[in-house]
Length: 182
Image (tube, rainbow, N blue to C red; front, side, top):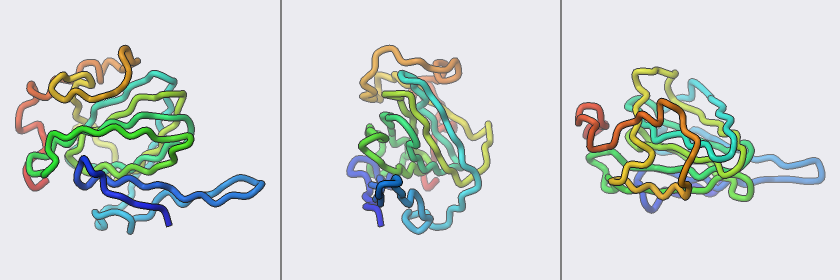
């Protein structure tokens, strides 16, 4: 069984150190089990694949109705997390986690934690979610918000027009942020 630890910086975020078994043919790892995570009522309904060239930054995104679980299938990323939940004991905390290549991890991201990643190499990210895609549940914060000061480790990433237009946290109305008890 893999090692599963709650983040020491952001409550309810879980980091899974995958356990591989291999021989001359290759290797195998169990990457997900529903029972590993605290939200045991969640049900996987969709799996997504994101392919990005080196230097791409996606995020910061957040949802009101979707839990994410990430696995890097190829390459290397730096995942970035920001706790937006007003009733969280770690509200306002930031964390980055390098994933992929020699650091094979799974990352459980709960509702109300903004998330994104920058690719350190060409990379493939697989993420499974507990709700179908809903454009109305896609929200974002500026990746370079000085009040968040996310330590991305990049100066000039490649970003989409949508992510480039994300507002600063201070400009997001309270009703468009995660609420207490969400």
